[in-house]
Length: 212
Length: 201
Image 1 (cartoon, each protein chain N blue to C red):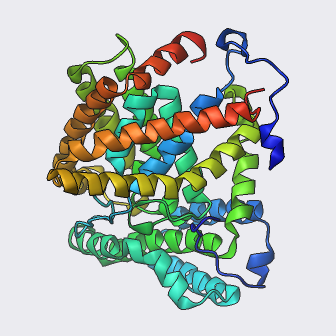
Image 2 (cartoon, rainbow over the protein chains, first blue to last red; image 1 turned 180 degrees about the vertical axis):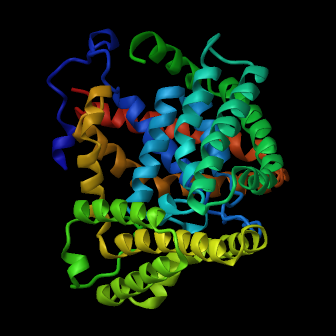
Protein backbone atom coordinates (compact mmCIF):
# COMPACT_ATOMS: atom_id res chain seq x y z
CA UNK A 1 0.00 0.00 0.00
CA UNK A 2 1.75 3.13 -1.16
CA UNK A 3 -0.92 5.28 0.46
CA UNK A 4 0.60 4.58 3.83
CA UNK A 5 3.77 6.39 2.84
CA UNK A 6 1.97 9.69 2.34
CA UNK A 7 2.79 12.26 4.96
CA UNK A 8 -0.35 13.35 6.79
CA UNK A 9 -1.18 16.84 5.61
CA UNK A 10 -2.40 17.92 9.01
CA UNK A 11 0.25 18.79 11.60
CA UNK A 12 0.31 16.72 14.80
CA UNK A 13 -2.23 18.14 17.18
CA UNK A 14 -1.16 18.78 20.72
CA UNK A 15 -3.11 16.82 23.34
CA UNK A 16 -4.70 19.97 24.77
CA UNK A 17 -6.57 20.71 21.58
CA UNK A 18 -8.45 17.42 21.49
CA UNK A 19 -12.05 17.31 22.62
CA UNK A 20 -12.09 16.48 26.31
CA UNK A 21 -14.17 13.32 26.27
CA UNK A 22 -12.59 11.83 23.17
CA UNK A 23 -10.82 8.52 23.60
CA UNK A 24 -7.25 9.05 22.40
CA UNK A 25 -5.80 6.69 19.83
CA UNK A 26 -3.01 5.56 22.16
CA UNK A 27 -5.65 4.62 24.74
CA UNK A 28 -7.59 2.74 22.08
CA UNK A 29 -4.55 0.62 21.25
CA UNK A 30 -3.79 -0.08 24.91
CA UNK A 31 -7.38 -1.08 25.62
CA UNK A 32 -7.45 -3.50 22.68
CA UNK A 33 -4.10 -5.10 23.45
CA UNK A 34 -4.98 -5.49 27.13
CA UNK A 35 -8.30 -7.11 26.28
CA UNK A 36 -6.30 -9.53 24.13
CA UNK A 37 -3.89 -10.10 27.03
CA UNK A 38 -6.74 -11.14 29.33
CA UNK A 39 -7.90 -13.58 26.65
CA UNK A 40 -4.38 -15.01 26.32
CA UNK A 41 -4.09 -15.46 30.09
CA UNK A 42 -7.01 -17.89 29.82
CA UNK A 43 -5.30 -20.03 27.20
CA UNK A 44 -3.30 -22.46 29.39
CA UNK A 45 -6.63 -23.94 30.39
CA UNK A 46 -8.88 -23.65 33.33
CA UNK A 47 -8.84 -25.79 36.43
CA UNK A 48 -12.43 -26.61 37.26
CA UNK A 49 -13.04 -27.38 40.90
CA UNK A 50 -15.65 -30.07 41.09
CA UNK A 51 -18.92 -28.58 42.16
CA UNK A 52 -18.48 -25.09 40.87
CA UNK A 53 -18.62 -23.87 37.31
CA UNK A 54 -16.50 -20.81 38.00
CA UNK A 55 -13.07 -21.95 36.85
CA UNK A 56 -9.78 -20.92 38.41
CA UNK A 57 -7.82 -19.06 35.79
CA UNK A 58 -5.24 -16.35 35.43
CA UNK A 59 -7.91 -14.20 33.82
CA UNK A 60 -8.96 -12.51 37.06
CA UNK A 61 -5.27 -11.72 37.52
CA UNK A 62 -5.43 -10.00 34.13
CA UNK A 63 -8.53 -8.08 35.18
CA UNK A 64 -6.75 -6.70 38.25
CA UNK A 65 -3.71 -5.76 36.13
CA UNK A 66 -5.91 -4.04 33.55
CA UNK A 67 -7.38 -1.83 36.26
CA UNK A 68 -4.05 -1.16 37.96
CA UNK A 69 -2.03 -0.39 34.83
CA UNK A 70 -4.64 1.19 32.53
CA UNK A 71 -6.64 3.08 35.13
CA UNK A 72 -10.35 2.98 35.90
CA UNK A 73 -11.93 4.09 32.62
CA UNK A 74 -9.61 2.32 30.22
CA UNK A 75 -9.41 -0.78 32.38
CA UNK A 76 -13.18 -1.12 32.40
CA UNK A 77 -13.29 -0.49 28.65
CA UNK A 78 -10.79 -3.31 28.07
CA UNK A 79 -13.11 -5.65 29.98
CA UNK A 80 -16.11 -4.36 28.02
CA UNK A 81 -14.37 -5.04 24.70
CA UNK A 82 -13.49 -8.56 25.83
CA UNK A 83 -17.04 -9.28 26.99
CA UNK A 84 -18.57 -7.98 23.74
CA UNK A 85 -16.32 -10.32 21.74
CA UNK A 86 -17.24 -13.20 24.04
CA UNK A 87 -20.93 -12.41 23.60
CA UNK A 88 -20.41 -12.37 19.84
CA UNK A 89 -19.31 -16.00 20.12
CA UNK A 90 -15.50 -15.92 20.20
CA UNK A 91 -13.95 -18.48 22.59
CA UNK A 92 -11.86 -15.97 24.54
CA UNK A 93 -12.62 -17.10 28.09
CA UNK A 94 -10.56 -19.68 29.94
CA UNK A 95 -10.92 -23.18 28.56
CA UNK A 96 -12.14 -21.84 25.23
CA UNK A 97 -15.51 -20.77 26.61
CA UNK A 98 -17.48 -18.14 24.78
CA UNK A 99 -20.84 -17.32 23.30
CA UNK A 100 -23.98 -16.09 24.99
CA UNK A 101 -24.17 -19.17 27.20
CA UNK A 102 -21.65 -17.76 29.65
CA UNK A 103 -23.98 -14.80 30.25
CA UNK A 104 -26.92 -17.00 31.21
CA UNK A 105 -24.83 -19.53 33.14
CA UNK A 106 -23.91 -19.62 36.84
CA UNK A 107 -20.73 -17.56 36.48
CA UNK A 108 -22.39 -14.69 34.58
CA UNK A 109 -22.28 -12.34 37.55
CA UNK A 110 -18.56 -12.87 38.03
CA UNK A 111 -17.93 -11.95 34.40
CA UNK A 112 -20.10 -8.85 34.57
CA UNK A 113 -18.41 -8.06 37.89
CA UNK A 114 -15.06 -7.78 36.10
CA UNK A 115 -16.31 -4.51 34.62
CA UNK A 116 -16.86 -2.49 37.83
CA UNK A 117 -14.09 -4.59 39.40
CA UNK A 118 -11.41 -3.31 37.02
CA UNK A 119 -12.83 0.21 37.38
CA UNK A 120 -12.54 0.09 41.18
CA UNK A 121 -9.00 -1.33 40.99
CA UNK A 122 -8.02 1.55 38.71
CA UNK A 123 -9.84 4.11 40.80
CA UNK A 124 -8.13 3.12 44.04
CA UNK A 125 -4.73 2.57 42.44
CA UNK A 126 -4.80 5.85 40.55
CA UNK A 127 -6.36 7.93 43.28
CA UNK A 128 -3.12 9.24 44.73
CA UNK A 129 0.44 9.83 43.66
CA UNK A 130 1.49 9.08 40.11
CA UNK A 131 2.90 5.62 40.64
CA UNK A 132 0.99 3.86 43.39
CA UNK A 133 2.87 2.03 46.13
CA UNK A 134 2.53 -1.66 46.84
CA UNK A 135 0.04 -1.14 49.71
CA UNK A 136 -2.28 0.95 47.61
CA UNK A 137 -2.06 -1.55 44.74
CA UNK A 138 -2.82 -4.46 47.05
CA UNK A 139 -5.79 -2.62 48.54
CA UNK A 140 -7.03 -1.87 45.03
CA UNK A 141 -6.74 -5.48 43.86
CA UNK A 142 -8.45 -6.81 46.99
CA UNK A 143 -11.33 -4.33 46.89
CA UNK A 144 -11.90 -4.26 43.13
CA UNK A 145 -10.61 -7.59 41.92
CA UNK A 146 -12.14 -9.65 44.72
CA UNK A 147 -14.66 -7.55 46.67
CA UNK A 148 -16.60 -6.05 43.80
CA UNK A 149 -16.44 -9.20 41.65
CA UNK A 150 -17.81 -11.45 44.39
CA UNK A 151 -20.40 -8.87 45.45
CA UNK A 152 -21.87 -9.13 41.96
CA UNK A 153 -21.03 -12.72 41.16
CA UNK A 154 -22.45 -14.51 44.17
CA UNK A 155 -25.95 -12.94 44.19
CA UNK A 156 -26.28 -13.51 40.45
CA UNK A 157 -25.23 -17.14 40.91
CA UNK A 158 -27.81 -17.50 43.66
CA UNK A 159 -30.46 -15.99 41.39
CA UNK A 160 -29.57 -18.13 38.37
CA UNK A 161 -29.47 -21.38 40.33
CA UNK A 162 -32.16 -20.72 42.92
CA UNK A 163 -29.72 -21.54 45.70
CA UNK A 164 -30.05 -19.65 48.99
CA UNK A 165 -27.56 -16.77 49.17
CA UNK A 166 -25.67 -18.32 52.09
CA UNK A 167 -25.10 -21.55 50.15
CA UNK A 168 -23.92 -19.64 47.11
CA UNK A 169 -21.41 -17.78 49.30
CA UNK A 170 -20.22 -21.08 50.73
CA UNK A 171 -19.79 -22.57 47.23
CA UNK A 172 -17.84 -19.56 46.01
CA UNK A 173 -15.63 -19.30 49.08
CA UNK A 174 -13.41 -22.13 47.74
CA UNK A 175 -12.08 -19.62 45.24
CA UNK A 176 -11.18 -16.92 47.75
CA UNK A 177 -7.71 -18.30 48.69
CA UNK A 178 -6.70 -18.55 45.03
CA UNK A 179 -7.98 -15.06 44.35
CA UNK A 180 -6.08 -13.69 47.36
CA UNK A 181 -2.87 -15.13 45.92
CA UNK A 182 -3.73 -13.58 42.56
CA UNK A 183 -4.37 -10.17 44.17
CA UNK A 184 -0.96 -10.26 45.88
CA UNK A 185 0.75 -11.32 42.64
CA UNK A 186 -1.10 -8.69 40.60
CA UNK A 187 -0.01 -5.88 42.92
CA UNK A 188 3.62 -7.09 42.96
CA UNK A 189 3.60 -7.37 39.16
CA UNK A 190 1.93 -3.98 38.67
CA UNK A 191 4.54 -2.40 40.93
CA UNK A 192 7.28 -4.07 38.89
CA UNK A 193 5.77 -2.79 35.65
CA UNK A 194 5.55 0.80 36.92
CA UNK A 195 9.20 0.57 37.97
CA UNK A 196 10.55 -1.00 34.79
CA UNK A 197 8.43 0.90 32.26
CA UNK A 198 7.84 4.43 33.49
CA UNK A 199 5.70 5.19 30.43
CA UNK A 200 3.09 2.86 31.94
CA UNK A 201 2.39 5.40 34.66
CA UNK A 202 3.61 8.47 32.82
CA UNK A 203 1.03 8.39 30.09
CA UNK A 204 -1.60 7.63 32.64
CA UNK A 205 -0.68 10.73 34.62
CA UNK A 206 -0.95 12.70 31.40
CA UNK A 207 -4.30 11.12 30.70
CA UNK A 208 -5.52 11.99 34.18
CA UNK A 209 -4.67 15.62 33.60
CA UNK A 210 -5.98 15.88 30.06
CA UNK A 211 -8.73 13.55 29.04
CA UNK A 212 -9.82 11.20 31.75
CA UNK B 1 -10.93 -14.05 11.28
CA UNK B 2 -7.20 -14.62 11.91
CA UNK B 3 -7.40 -18.05 13.45
CA UNK B 4 -10.17 -17.22 15.87
CA UNK B 5 -13.56 -18.55 15.00
CA UNK B 6 -16.79 -18.61 16.90
CA UNK B 7 -18.98 -21.64 17.42
CA UNK B 8 -21.21 -20.80 14.45
CA UNK B 9 -22.55 -23.83 12.59
CA UNK B 10 -23.60 -22.94 9.02
CA UNK B 11 -27.13 -23.82 8.06
CA UNK B 12 -30.32 -22.66 6.36
CA UNK B 13 -32.89 -23.23 9.09
CA UNK B 14 -35.45 -20.54 10.08
CA UNK B 15 -33.31 -19.93 13.17
CA UNK B 16 -30.28 -19.21 11.02
CA UNK B 17 -32.24 -16.74 8.89
CA UNK B 18 -33.64 -14.81 11.85
CA UNK B 19 -31.81 -11.54 12.57
CA UNK B 20 -29.27 -11.39 15.39
CA UNK B 21 -31.20 -8.64 17.20
CA UNK B 22 -34.44 -10.62 17.06
CA UNK B 23 -32.70 -13.69 18.45
CA UNK B 24 -31.11 -11.69 21.28
CA UNK B 25 -34.49 -10.24 22.21
CA UNK B 26 -36.11 -13.67 22.05
CA UNK B 27 -33.36 -15.07 24.26
CA UNK B 28 -33.95 -12.37 26.86
CA UNK B 29 -37.69 -13.09 26.83
CA UNK B 30 -37.14 -16.86 27.01
CA UNK B 31 -34.80 -16.54 29.99
CA UNK B 32 -37.36 -14.37 31.76
CA UNK B 33 -40.01 -16.99 31.05
CA UNK B 34 -37.74 -19.70 32.47
CA UNK B 35 -37.45 -17.77 35.73
CA UNK B 36 -41.22 -17.39 35.90
CA UNK B 37 -41.93 -21.11 35.32
CA UNK B 38 -42.16 -22.71 38.72
CA UNK B 39 -43.16 -26.36 38.44
CA UNK B 40 -41.10 -29.32 37.22
CA UNK B 41 -43.80 -30.10 34.64
CA UNK B 42 -43.70 -26.60 33.15
CA UNK B 43 -39.93 -26.76 32.92
CA UNK B 44 -40.16 -30.22 31.41
CA UNK B 45 -42.34 -28.65 28.71
CA UNK B 46 -39.73 -25.94 28.23
CA UNK B 47 -37.08 -28.63 27.87
CA UNK B 48 -39.11 -30.26 25.09
CA UNK B 49 -39.39 -26.88 23.35
CA UNK B 50 -35.62 -26.36 23.58
CA UNK B 51 -34.94 -29.84 22.18
CA UNK B 52 -37.37 -29.13 19.32
CA UNK B 53 -35.63 -25.82 18.60
CA UNK B 54 -32.30 -27.63 18.41
CA UNK B 55 -33.84 -30.19 16.07
CA UNK B 56 -35.24 -27.43 13.82
CA UNK B 57 -31.90 -25.60 13.74
CA UNK B 58 -30.05 -28.69 12.54
CA UNK B 59 -26.81 -27.73 14.31
CA UNK B 60 -26.32 -31.27 15.55
CA UNK B 61 -26.39 -32.66 19.05
CA UNK B 62 -22.60 -32.60 19.46
CA UNK B 63 -22.56 -28.83 18.95
CA UNK B 64 -25.39 -28.47 21.46
CA UNK B 65 -23.58 -30.59 24.04
CA UNK B 66 -20.43 -28.48 23.58
CA UNK B 67 -22.46 -25.45 24.68
CA UNK B 68 -23.86 -27.10 27.83
CA UNK B 69 -20.72 -29.08 28.70
CA UNK B 70 -18.98 -26.31 30.71
CA UNK B 71 -21.79 -26.28 33.30
CA UNK B 72 -22.22 -30.07 33.58
CA UNK B 73 -20.47 -30.48 36.94
CA UNK B 74 -22.13 -27.42 38.31
CA UNK B 75 -25.50 -28.88 37.29
CA UNK B 76 -24.73 -32.15 39.08
CA UNK B 77 -23.63 -30.34 42.24
CA UNK B 78 -26.60 -27.99 42.15
CA UNK B 79 -28.98 -30.93 41.77
CA UNK B 80 -27.38 -32.75 44.71
CA UNK B 81 -27.38 -29.73 47.01
CA UNK B 82 -30.97 -28.80 46.18
CA UNK B 83 -32.23 -32.38 46.39
CA UNK B 84 -30.76 -32.77 49.87
CA UNK B 85 -31.82 -29.40 51.23
CA UNK B 86 -35.00 -28.43 49.39
CA UNK B 87 -36.40 -31.65 47.97
CA UNK B 88 -36.53 -33.29 44.56
CA UNK B 89 -39.03 -30.94 42.77
CA UNK B 90 -36.95 -27.85 43.58
CA UNK B 91 -33.79 -29.66 42.53
CA UNK B 92 -35.31 -30.61 39.16
CA UNK B 93 -36.68 -27.10 38.57
CA UNK B 94 -33.55 -25.14 39.40
CA UNK B 95 -31.18 -27.48 37.56
CA UNK B 96 -33.37 -27.61 34.45
CA UNK B 97 -33.81 -23.84 34.50
CA UNK B 98 -30.08 -23.24 34.53
CA UNK B 99 -29.22 -25.85 31.90
CA UNK B 100 -32.02 -24.68 29.59
CA UNK B 101 -30.92 -21.03 29.82
CA UNK B 102 -27.38 -22.02 28.87
CA UNK B 103 -28.64 -24.27 26.06
CA UNK B 104 -30.87 -21.53 24.61
CA UNK B 105 -28.09 -18.95 24.70
CA UNK B 106 -25.83 -21.51 23.07
CA UNK B 107 -28.38 -22.04 20.33
CA UNK B 108 -28.35 -18.32 19.51
CA UNK B 109 -24.54 -18.43 19.35
CA UNK B 110 -24.57 -21.57 17.17
CA UNK B 111 -27.01 -20.14 14.63
CA UNK B 112 -25.62 -16.59 14.37
CA UNK B 113 -22.48 -15.63 12.50
CA UNK B 114 -19.88 -13.97 14.72
CA UNK B 115 -19.75 -10.98 12.39
CA UNK B 116 -23.54 -10.55 12.45
CA UNK B 117 -23.65 -10.76 16.24
CA UNK B 118 -20.79 -8.28 16.51
CA UNK B 119 -22.55 -5.85 14.19
CA UNK B 120 -25.70 -6.16 16.28
CA UNK B 121 -23.82 -5.60 19.55
CA UNK B 122 -22.07 -2.59 18.03
CA UNK B 123 -25.47 -1.10 17.21
CA UNK B 124 -26.63 -1.78 20.77
CA UNK B 125 -23.51 0.00 22.04
CA UNK B 126 -24.10 3.12 19.92
CA UNK B 127 -24.89 5.18 23.07
CA UNK B 128 -21.22 4.74 24.00
CA UNK B 129 -20.51 7.75 21.82
CA UNK B 130 -21.50 9.87 24.80
CA UNK B 131 -18.39 8.67 26.64
CA UNK B 132 -16.14 9.47 23.70
CA UNK B 133 -16.51 6.24 21.75
CA UNK B 134 -17.96 6.77 18.32
CA UNK B 135 -19.04 3.65 16.36
CA UNK B 136 -15.92 3.76 14.19
CA UNK B 137 -13.59 3.67 17.19
CA UNK B 138 -15.66 0.96 18.82
CA UNK B 139 -15.46 -1.38 15.85
CA UNK B 140 -11.80 -0.55 15.34
CA UNK B 141 -11.16 -1.51 18.95
CA UNK B 142 -13.05 -4.80 18.59
CA UNK B 143 -11.17 -5.84 15.47
CA UNK B 144 -7.83 -4.69 16.93
CA UNK B 145 -8.47 -6.94 19.92
CA UNK B 146 -9.21 -9.96 17.74
CA UNK B 147 -6.05 -9.24 15.77
CA UNK B 148 -3.99 -8.78 18.96
CA UNK B 149 -4.80 -12.17 20.48
CA UNK B 150 -2.28 -14.10 18.34
CA UNK B 151 0.28 -11.30 18.77
CA UNK B 152 0.02 -11.31 22.57
CA UNK B 153 0.01 -15.09 22.54
CA UNK B 154 3.31 -15.04 20.65
CA UNK B 155 4.75 -12.51 23.12
CA UNK B 156 3.71 -14.81 25.97
CA UNK B 157 5.48 -17.77 24.35
CA UNK B 158 8.65 -15.71 23.92
CA UNK B 159 8.60 -14.68 27.58
CA UNK B 160 8.03 -18.30 28.59
CA UNK B 161 11.09 -19.36 26.62
CA UNK B 162 13.20 -16.58 28.10
CA UNK B 163 12.03 -17.66 31.55
CA UNK B 164 13.09 -21.22 30.90
CA UNK B 165 16.48 -20.01 29.71
CA UNK B 166 16.89 -17.95 32.87
CA UNK B 167 15.92 -20.91 35.05
CA UNK B 168 13.04 -19.07 36.74
CA UNK B 169 10.29 -21.15 35.22
CA UNK B 170 7.98 -21.03 38.21
CA UNK B 171 8.17 -17.35 39.04
CA UNK B 172 4.96 -15.53 38.15
CA UNK B 173 6.81 -12.25 38.49
CA UNK B 174 9.44 -13.28 35.94
CA UNK B 175 6.60 -14.13 33.57
CA UNK B 176 4.11 -11.33 34.06
CA UNK B 177 6.37 -8.28 34.36
CA UNK B 178 8.23 -8.82 31.05
CA UNK B 179 4.99 -9.87 29.37
CA UNK B 180 3.15 -6.75 30.52
CA UNK B 181 6.00 -4.51 29.45
CA UNK B 182 6.21 -6.04 25.99
CA UNK B 183 2.41 -5.84 25.74
CA UNK B 184 2.43 -2.14 26.68
CA UNK B 185 5.28 -1.50 24.26
CA UNK B 186 3.39 -3.25 21.49
CA UNK B 187 0.26 -1.23 22.30
CA UNK B 188 2.15 2.06 22.26
CA UNK B 189 3.75 1.20 18.91
CA UNK B 190 0.32 0.26 17.60
CA UNK B 191 -1.03 3.61 18.82
CA UNK B 192 1.77 5.43 17.00
CA UNK B 193 1.04 3.48 13.83
CA UNK B 194 -2.68 4.33 14.03
CA UNK B 195 -1.87 7.99 14.64
CA UNK B 196 0.43 8.22 11.61
CA UNK B 197 -2.36 6.71 9.52
CA UNK B 198 -4.68 9.49 10.59
CA UNK B 199 -6.94 7.72 13.09
CA UNK B 200 -6.45 10.55 15.53
CA UNK B 201 -8.52 13.11 13.58
